[in-house]
Length: 169
Image (cartoon, rainbow, N blue to C red; front, side):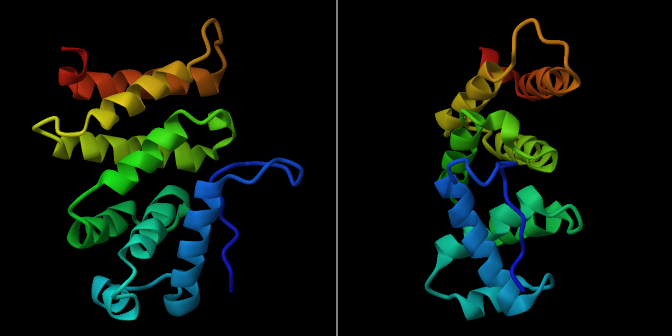
């Protein structure tokens, strides 16, 4: 059974986002093969030559699945992909996306959660793209708007900066 979880809340007439479709295809492959319960060994055995699909599927589950524990999927990513360049690229893309406000709330919360995890791991400041993600997220803040969604975004961006003060040095 295919899962109908997408990143963006878009209408049928809106243009489909390529990263959304790519991640969606990967997670559906997982769910068709394993359902919602799988281990690293099962994934690696089933898809030994497709590490990008594994990464995309786990990343999509973290962003969209409110039921599963994101820490479990994150540990699967850490054990199978020590290099986070692909994820960082997708985060920067989503953070600067023109339709950022169409991301589902769970996706936004998890995006900040993943970005926080990556910033914690980047102690040697090897990934300047993480700074770009924070800059792009801060550009999503609507000046003069006191809507709850905008205030939450302000809070989350400031919290990322506060927890990673090297960003402002």
